Length: 291
Ligand SMILES: [Zn+2]
Image (cartoon, rainbow, N blue to C red; front, side, top):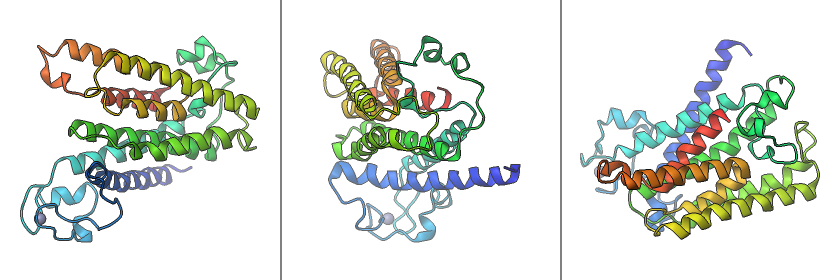
């Protein structure tokens, strides 16, 4: 693909990510209050006036309005452009990383072929030098990882605003995860597939759930519900969309960092307020881009 076309594609994907971020803002604002996410259309929470289409452009509108409602001049939260920008950057980065040579679908690296070298990230040790992944694989991988990242991003923001995370937030990721586990092994396009056997695929899905459940049990056993808000369903989504080995690593890593920040509270109270699910998000971002 020519360089100009590639840049144009990345820009288009960035815009798509920003639009999804705009939708995530609606979800973050309305879902904890048990309001519909589709109706009514966006309106100012202070003066109730409908937001015009040109004031609803992701990222840009907040800056053009200087962070204030056009009608009542009440401040609009910084959270809006930040979530939109993060969503756009994550989607673009995940697409970029997924198009690099040697990238598989995440949940496929599991025994019997899963080796220590692979676990440590040395994919060349077990795989022959690969060409760029097939287009369908790039799209599947980007979609799979983005849905997980968007879910965790929305959950993290809701947790940071000290709200209860409704379980419905995790439903799309759970449904997608189950569908991928059950449907993918039969698709003939995936030559890289290591478990074409449906029985094995179901076993792997079960093993992933058990592994996730174990980490969740550890978390539930160790901490009160306040600080680990949303961690349980988030781990299930991660298990389904990222696979057991990576989920165990990011889950254990998130718990370790969380414990560390809790012990450092007397010195850095701000860091201590970061919820457990935020550290999980950081871990999943790292895995999505580099592993
Ligand atoms: Zn207003």
